[in-house]
Length: 138
Image 1 (spheres, one colour):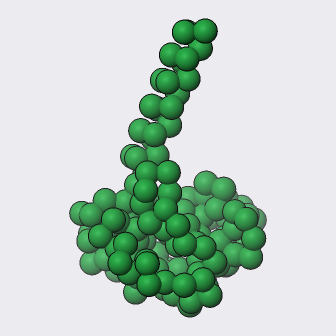
Image 2 (cartoon, rainbow, N blue to C red):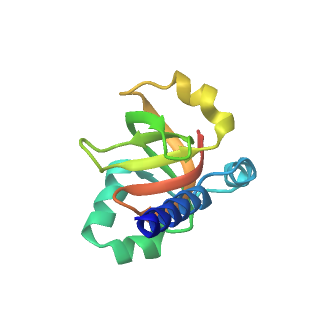
């Protein structure tokens, strides 16, 4: 029993550590905000590209600064308490999850579902939905 609890503890620590590693940072956000976007694309279009061929979409978008546009469909905080917007999509796990630095909480708090937004961030690929980090509202 103790061994099982220890293993679960290690798994939990690893999961939280991995989630934290993928979070946006204050310095990363300012770096991305100053960088020119490689692409401006609707959130629904980039999501469709990833659903059609994740390998091709990664080649085009992954690790690049992009601007996604669309309607806000959800607003919340992730597992490590970073604020995010879901842009585009119509249901669960579609569209783009745009993760912001903690300094953006005031901006995100003013957003509402249905708002049309443009968000600049670094595309990290497809993780159940298209993920962007170090985001800023444009």
